[in-house]
Image (cartoon, rainbow over all chains, first blue to last red; front, side):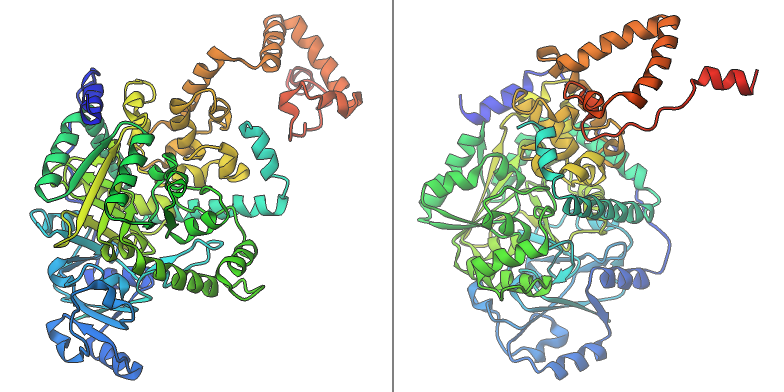
Length: 186
Length: 452
């Protein structure tokens, strides 16, 4: 008997009481979505900015290795998206579009179509996500309703920069992934 | 070594154990604050508990549905009855890829299976990429907490370790500096690895996808750069529907560290073109636990660690005192199911205060199961000294006269008896505990004087 059969028949040999799968109510909470989303991103150690604030930051920093998959900022790209994700090693900035955001925790949904390469938002030093302020959801419940039938090979709720508190619980931003997250809300 | 013996060792460094206690309480406190911001928090716990109950009641069907859908998406599924088979399957995949260096993100399951020593014996370098896990790996230690693996270490110790292993400046204890050094070191490993191993937080039956949550982004750094992704998953990690994630992702990080969500919550459905994803579904004692009526619901655990942060025993005895892959209250009900003899002292590492049960996001009755395990343990080997005192107490409480006399005797005796007798090794309750000053009179005497 294969392990598969062994495991499944061990489970099936038990007489277990039936338990109904509960329905999930559509919880949401009051409050201005943009304000709550902004607060959430700030708490997660990211930054929400306007287009002009972003442009000011970007031009002052003088980056030379930039990939932009966002139509609104395509002119900022200095590099095309490579074929091999290993070529992202020294990338300074990645600019991508977000599909929608969740106000309660700042999570932004991204799929293969936004990412180009799955490694992109992790391998880059700085991550910029461009997001329409009309595309904010209240809680994760509405978020999952929105992607109920999504069929991307990979998708992710991204809520902030790479961070760790593994050394004496001191929060450090920029562990292994992106050192910063900027959300350009337009 | 038993839990009390290990705990005594941990408590020798009073300053550090105090820090440990206070730091974990701080995390518990953050959890309280953030959960109070969610009016439906208790409803979410009920829902999570109900969903997991339904999963356990229909586990075989859900596993088959999960397998069918994952295969449809191009994921390769393996089944492992025990840790040996799990480890062998991982090795076979690595050998097919001619891979001699693998990066691994946090996975309690691979700790449970002792995958690292197994692979290392075969000449494969395993790099744990979660910062805390890399730190304990450098020290040849297991994690002492399932969410905060290096919580037992002070930055001075980490600074010394990194000076030796990563050639950081001697004496530089700045967490930012040390984290940056680890970042450079780990990114080198990510960009070199052909295969990446991760755990699984949730597997969705309806879609065949699985979800991995991190704050560091280390799981994603590994898998998206590697050619092959191996995801090691306990069979109890199933959720029926994608929308169930709405409930569980709202609960997980808030319960674990008091943050509203982990920064990276990755949903894997199918591999990138030209790449491979393997899932290894592991039993390793889970079906046996499913068969135990009283302990079945321990399989609902989502490994948030909230029960550890709140436990007065865990906070004061440290993760290593449990000598079990999953320490703390939940570990103390999971591990006896795997090896009752080895873990027989764990169900007693509790005050049965119930705080673990109160914070558990899936409402496992942890403290009641601890009590139940005690019954199982004492059936096989009872404690002679405690048993004798209980028999004696039984006789005294039965007779009002005996009670009166012994009460008065004890009040006087405790004043005059030498400590060596009161804290005699046979008195197991006297260890690390001080008696309060005995009252001058009994309650009965006080009542007659003041109220009659």
